[in-house]
Image 1: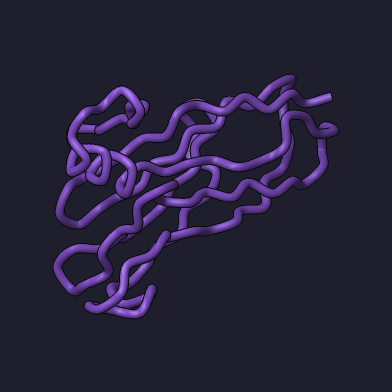
Image 2 (image 1 turned 90 degrees about the vertical axis):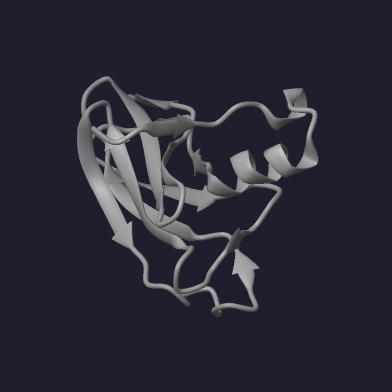
Length: 129
């Protein structure tokens, strides 16, 4: 089983280099708080909030996966250079359209960095009406 890194509040981290490392690798989920059952809703996952990630041939975000609990509901794969290549940094970002099921959904995103492994978002709960 690969090691899964989790986001830590960068305001509690003293060294700027460590803040950069944590933030640029962490996925962040943006979505609604509630949705009607059986409806599709948008879930946007962005890698990095304050800091951008490199996009070169040996170091880039290769995928973003979205889970509801332990069930994989969506995944996007990326190629090196999708953000512009060696001279550029950016936020890998994808919007998934997800079907609302159950009484609540517990969403968690994973991003995979080719150099630093798997990173997990904070969970986001969506109430299903």
